[in-house]
Image (cartoon, rainbow, N blue to C red; front, side, top):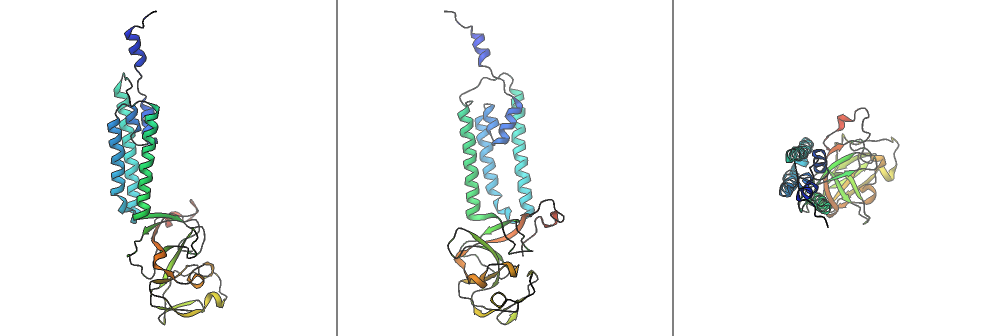
Length: 284
């Protein structure tokens, strides 16, 4: 039996790295391009660095400008990692694949990246910020149907003030959330007369209130006087004629309130006139 020449074996073992593929893999999942280049430690380092930086910058999500800076920084970091993978692949020349250059290693690295991304999202949703998209116009014109907005997660002891736009769980126990504005606090007396909201006998200044229907409907436009129980809040939608709120649901217990709306990060009707003007608008 003929023996294969050692030089022939070496030629077959050599598999030069493709720079474009290394860069593409790094864009698919941070660090995979480095693993492809045989630099698995560097790949792990980049992946961990991205997670640590993202966690460190989580508190910045409370401000739209900071959110944009975070996204820009993260994109820049990913481009840097891809460029590093590209240039390293070009410099390697003749490359003999090692133990880390297996398809299942690449797949495991991608799965690990997805798992870390999921952990980051879970951490953000539980302790910091959540994103929502409203399906209705009950808070129009402040929040329009289809608007995507950022919400600060509120702990049990966080304060809730009049005028806050809050997200709360459905009082009936269904798996859905509401977004409304706080108009009366625990212990206050709220009264509605001919669409005018009064708290402790004083008319409430409501520049945000929107009335689509001028006709008076007693069940909707008149209420009370009603004393808000301790530990509960009276909430209403800004679109007064199109909102299911405390006028019909009753007061909202503090334990149901999960977050406070901060700003619109992506308005509805992208590209429409005035769309850019609502980008990043604070919700007050």
